[in-house]
Each structure stands twice: as C-alpha cells, then as structure tokens.
Image (tube, rainbow, N blue to C red):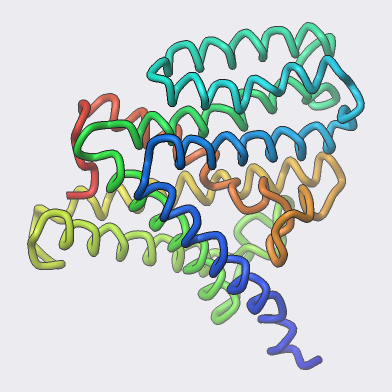
Length: 277
C-alpha cells in the first residue's frame, strides 16, 4: 500500500457508514416526536453499553441499573419533563459515585452518566422547541459533521504540526482550521436558507457563522477529550458498532459536548429562536 493510499485507507468505510446513518438520523429529526426520541434513547442505551464495557462493569447488575438512567432520561424529556430527566441523571450520578466509592480517574464509572446522558436530554429538548426545533437540531448536526469532515480532509491533505500529540497524534492544526472553516461555511449556508438572504449578507450572517465556529471548537474539544478517555482506558476504539468509526462514542464524541452547549444557548436566547437565521 502506498503512503497516499494509507492516508485515505479508512475513507471508504467512513463514507459507507455515513451513507447509512446520516439519512436515518436526519429523517428521524425531520419526523420528530417519538421517532426522534426513540432513536436518541436507543443510542443512549448503546453508549451506556460501551461505557460499562470500558469500565469492566457489564456484568454488574447495579451498574446496569444505574446506566438505565440514560435512555430513561430521554423518555422523560420526550414526555415533556426535561427537569425530571436531568434530576434522574443527577441522582444516578450520585448513586454511581457511592457505588464505585468515589469519582476519580481510577473510578470513572459514575462520570459516564452525565457525560453521556446530558446530550440525549439536550437533543430531545431542542427538537421539541416550537417553530425552531427541527432546524436547530439538523443544522447543529450538519455543523458537527462539517467540522469533522473538514478536519479529516484538511489534516490529510496538508498535514503539518500536531494539534495535541500527547492526546491524539493524528490530529493537526491544519485539520482543526479546516474543520472550523467547514463549520463556518455550513453556518453561512444555513443563514442564507433559513433567513432567506444572500450567503454573504454583511452583518446578518455573522451570528450563525460565529455560532457555527463556536460549535466547531466545542466539537473538536469533545473529540480530543474522548481521545484522552481512550488513552486512559487503553483502547483504540470505544467499540465496534460502526464500521470505519469504531463505537458509538467514537462517532458521537463531538455531539456529547456540542449538544448541551447549544441547548444552553437556546435556553438563554428563548424558546422558538432559530439559532442559525
């Protein structure tokens, strides 16, 4: 295998996986309601399964019961009780900390509950917002995907200095910049479509572009954090559920940080606000 082909060796599997998963996710978001909440609940259960495996706790009845809080919090949010969903995650986290006798790098079990669970509550809550939910969630995911794809392509095309060699040796500064440029482009496109204005409208498109860059930064931070977690656990991938990507956690690391941040911003700006107009 040549150096160039090795550089792009996993691209085919990545494209095939995305071709299957992206339409499913976007379709469920578009439908909303039980379809989207059900998808998020299933993903939350899958994330819980992976985390329990990383912690070596899949055979522990108590640990499994604690992590049932992840899909249950999604169900509560879908039923119109996001506060109850958040409370459930908080109680499960406290109980998990007591069960594992603390929360530390050597006892990371309970940390997985808020780390994996908040994004599910955030996504379902965002989708429920009248008049803005579908657009906000779809563009959020498009920005995250653009950041990931832009970083992948730019990093392999240009290479250069490593972004965080002690955490993830494959990531470069050129990739990080490429990801943010791609995210900003999606923000501008969303502003043009949702705001019904030219793409380079002088000031009106500034907010969605800046927001997209912010989401891109948070997404990349989430990616690096998950890489650090895998180093801590001594694994290459969190699982094997998604060909070309590893596990669910490998594919959704950016969503786990970007979704709660976006939901918080939507909460501050008010219900029904389309963030990307």
